[in-house]
Image (cartoon, rainbow, N blue to C red; front, side, top):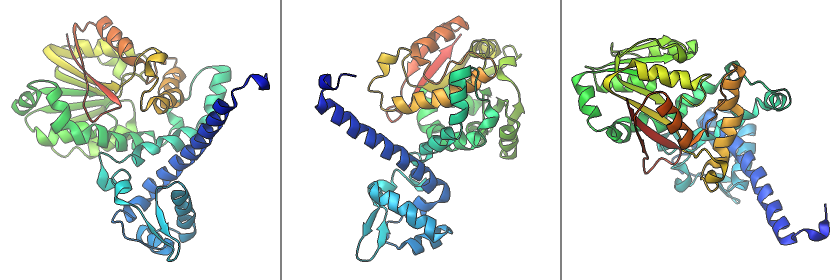
Length: 353
């Protein structure tokens, strides 16, 4: 390296940026802890409290709470009065960190950082030896995804998502057959089942744990969930509506899944697919507000779980261009890509045969 050739101003700026990244990564871990332990919720009212008072409200050990508060203060998330040693979560911060703030609770997404960090050794092995990391190495994945889906999908179904398909709400009120591919814990279908009792809702997922939760929460008698490899859907012209919420890109054989969805749709049916908002070419994602996070999630989860099963390894950032190409290859002829003003993470594909 030619030190004399280095632009010291640029080098110093990059070093400062790297320090910010290290601090940001650390705060992401602490934010996840604050969410999971209920500490942000215990401070949501904005009242100044000591570390002992906050610990009692959250039913936690004070020594750990005190150290967590240190990180929150140093990171500018929580304030402290040095004279009284009372801590406050400002209202402007609480509206993005507490369960009451959902669907704007960014602390939910912070959980992905420790979740992915736990498999770093496995990913390093994959870089050197190939292959992938199986779903079994992610014990909290369905829990975190259900948490995230509750904000991005379930909370916005009636107001934002259904209106993307003209007339869909009316059809659901009249009574249609709906399938959710890769349904996870089934919260979206169970929510729709409550609001549209004349329709029948089905969900397929390979995870027995997720399907057990979905069936346990199916209280309306018109929602049905089954453990099934969605690449092996063998129904023909059975469903009026098929949905896939953030579920296609990490499939072992996404092309086969899309083809099966096409066959399972009735004539005149519609496929509504939510997937990550990104472009296929890397340079097109420069400046994406969530680009680094989404590529990280893709590398350390979505891509690798597919590769672990000998799959395509598309990854979360397969991109709009690749998605449209694969939908067309599956036999869909009408593909609309829609966006929601408040949603910086997803594209919404309204697709018809």
